[in-house]
Structure formats: structure tokens, C-alpha cells
Length: 459
Image (cartoon, rainbow, N blue to C red; front, side, top):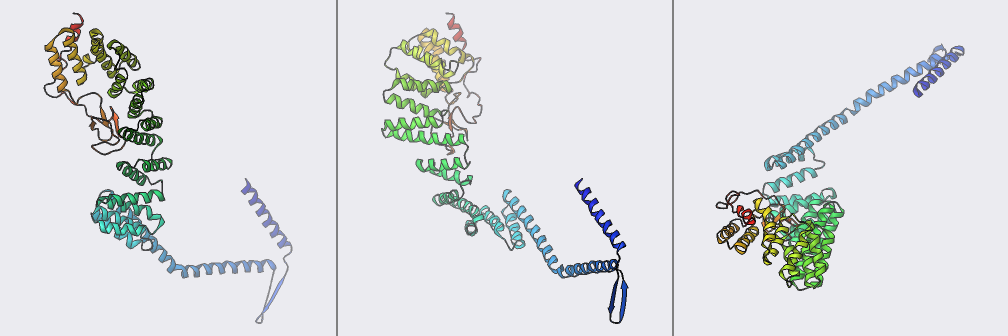
């Protein structure tokens, strides 16, 4: 609407001007070189307008002719630029495909086409040299990348990878530290630096790096909390080894605060309270942890708190703990063991019946069943079969310390997996464990003496 109104206004002004000129044509006389020209003002204005148009047209043609060499050069440079960018794209595709020769070839093409800026081609050549097992060339090329701020981090990454390939670990970590200092958002640098520090058990520097990495988004809050708690548990173990009971308790508390779900932290805190003679605090920690994830080490700590009490009292303590997670296998085993110590055969059998009927393969379950058969009925045949099964199913427990990265079982918790070296990956019952069949000779559910449980219950 605004444009229409403006157009109408302009047309109206032009019409008004034309009418005024028609009513007031005026007269113009020109004498030039013996010539006389008589005309009106509108004709003179029209002639001037034609001359202006002709002048601008001729000017455009001249400008085009004069600019042809430059336009040709720009077109040629643009064509070379497109060719260089295509070569770079193909070169990095070759890097991903681990084709060192193809990457070097495309890098040379890009370097030739992009002669005014060869940083990207240099980076491509450096990665190709490293891929092609040419460390000296890779080191020289990556060193060149350090000269520009835009490519410095990439150069440090290449130098770190080259140093690692040559086994120069200390030098590689220095490159990672430099890169992380210049750009805390460089995830590869933050992770490499942190992993190196924890591998060397440099706990304080590792905590500083971890906090910086968390703030810059290298680690999520959950990842950072788990790693922080793992470091604190490792330091707690060192304090326990050194006899520093108070320090161990302090570190265990901080570990629980950092990650309440980290079971080793709660186990250490319970043990520390027990070592200080504070049984009630230790029991509270065990009961809270048992509610989350029952564990044999927690059961061991709990039994140790009441070791001087009589057998019946210990059964009551075990029942109290089991009530926080009554159907868990660990709860059943805990109460059953206490009941066997007190010679409460019926209570022990009732606790063991469900896992036996379910075909649970656990050497502790088999040993308890052997004790039950021998103690209650003096049935040495069934007891012997259970003991044989206990030996045969060792290593097939339903839960264990396991690495979430490689699935390897561990006899005990450690800050890093002993198989793959991954930090903060060992958890209770975690990992990618494969389902395994019973080893040859292990009784099948049909052949196992589970029927003896039900039969004995009617004796």
C-alpha cells in the first residue's frame, strides 16, 4: 500500500511537470560555428537526458573492457580456490579412511591451489605423516602450525599424538597441558591431561584439572562427580595404609558427598567409623548403602561391628539390616549365615530356598547349603554335592566388581581397571559381562539337590 501511494505521488508530479512545461515551453536559441538552432526548453532537456544516457552507456562498456583482465584473474583464483577446498575435503576423508598416500596426494593438490593460505594443507599433511608412520615429518609440520593462533591447538594435538606414538609420555602430557591451558574447551586435552595425572596418582593436580574440565563442559557434572569421588576414595585408601584414621574418615565423607552412589566411598566411610570405635555411625552408613546396593564388603563391616555379641543377637542384627532390602540375594545370604551360626535351621532354609529354586550360581550359596545339610540332618552326601558345586561355580557369581568399559571382573575395587586402565570404571555388578553357561560338570537345575530343600522342610 505504501509503495502504491508513493508511485501515484511520483506519477502525479511527473504529469504536473509535463503540463506546466507544455503551458510554458519557452524558447532557446543557440549560435555555434555559424549555425543557429532555435528550439524549446523541453527539447533541450530531452537532448541533455539522451546525452547523459549515452555517456553512461559508453562509460560502462569502457569499464567492462578495462576490467576484463581483473575479472579473468578473479575467476581463475575462485576456480583454484574451489579446487583446493575440494582437495582438502577429499584429503580429510582419506585421513578418516586411514589412507595415508591419498591424504598426502590431496594435501599436495590443496597446497598448490591454496598457495596464499596453506595452513589447512599443512595440517592435512601432518596428520597424513603421522598416519603413515613418519613421525619426524609429522613433528616438523605440527611445529609449523604452532606459529598461528588459529592452528596452534591443532598443532599441539598432532605433537601429542606423535609423542605418544614414539613413547615419549612426559612430552605428550606437556603438549596436552599447554593445549588445555590455552583452550579449556579442548576436550581431548582435558581428558588426556586428567588421565595422565590419575595414572601417576597425582591426585591434587588431577582435581584441579577435573574442576576446570567440568566448568568448560569437557565432563558432565555426573562424570566429574564420579571421578572426584573416585580420587577421594583412592586417597582414603592411602590414608588407611598410612594409619591416618582421621584423614581417612574425612576423605571418605567428602567422597560420599561428591557421589552418594559410589559404593566404595560408603564402604570406606563405614570402615573408618568402625576403626574410630563409632559403631552407631558405621551401622548407619552400612544400612543406607545396603538400601541402595547390598554388597558382601558391607556385610563384612556390619558383622564386624557386632562380633562380640551372642549368635541370636547377631541374627537380630542381620534381620534388621536385611529389612532395608529384603529380597536381595545379599540380604538372604547375610541372614542365612547368621541363622546357621545360631543353629536356626528353619530360618536359614527359608532364606535360602528362593535363590536355590531360582538356580542362582553363587559359591557362597552352595557353601551355606552344604552347612545346612550337614548341620540340620547330618546329610553328608547332599553336603558334599553342594561343596562340589561351590567349587565348580566359582567365577560365575551373579554380581561382582566389574569394569564398565571392558567388562572385566575384578577381585576387589580399584580406582582404575587393571585390564584396560580406564579410570573410575570399576563398579559393583556393572559392566558388559557376557552371559555364560555353567562349566561342564556343574549340576543343571534338574540335577541339583534343590529338591532336598523342599523335602527337608517336611521332615
